[in-house]
Length: 72
Image (cartoon, rainbow, N blue to C red; front, side, top):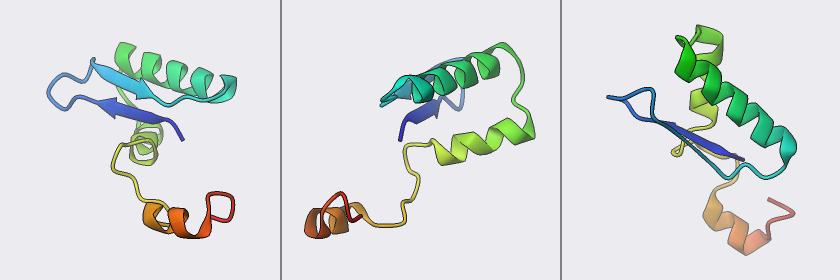
């Protein structure tokens, strides 16, 4: 999953990390560009929660090392 980080004090500065594949790169680039140019709508603001650096996963990362990445 890619990560999109927005500076709190300077919302026009955003970082996009880990976009593996053309669909994710396209989505993240378009998402960040739209939010830098104009105000974030409530529908778009929810994506920051899913793409944040401190998001939660269903299986903890420590369990992935024990049971394997494919199973996790």
